[in-house]
Image (cartoon, rainbow, N blue to C red; front, side, top):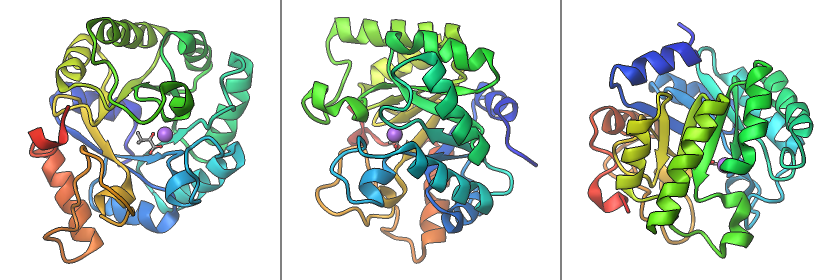
Length: 263
Ligand code: KIV
Ligand code: NA
């Protein structure tokens, strides 16, 4: 049975935790789907993971459409979210619509964009035109130069209040999901409790409706120091399939993320 926005929202409302992973190609799309991953996210993290870039900023709309099409060919019933890359949506709602249309034509069922209040008009514009939008709050990797690095967000009272207000405004504008990256667990819990749409967390504690990790991170093959919120699911697994199964199980049972993965 096809996973749709409706079935995802119903399952989240019933308290089922949703397991999300990034996915960039057809082989992994088939594998992740067979392991019960609920949503495949074609993340612009592919800039770093696949292309060897130092940030997500150089990723083009063409790159995103190419990988979205590959994932869509490998998946038969998954819900696919594709990232709008840096520079492809910030200029205007009309620019965002043209870019989102390219990703939807490539096989995405939803697009994700980074930003709070500044993106409300764009989220409303796309949503009203039949394009499901997932909003991305907290650590915004496309704004790394303004943020001064990849740091935990929403730590002060005023930043936390701003994030909560942004999440509510984006939901009001029509966002079908809200992703939070690297925020205190208590804040993500408060946002999840306030919103009606599902939340997706990465480094956002155990109380979000869904969890996501970068595929290569959870397989333990990303070089360098591991981020606090990442767990290597290849530890104790004898195949990639087994590692992905273990991730899905750990998310569904609430065992992941554990306190050591949270802020
Ligand atoms: O690009 C990506 O992989 C993402 C996730 C880290 C949320 O946006
Ligand atoms: Na991304």
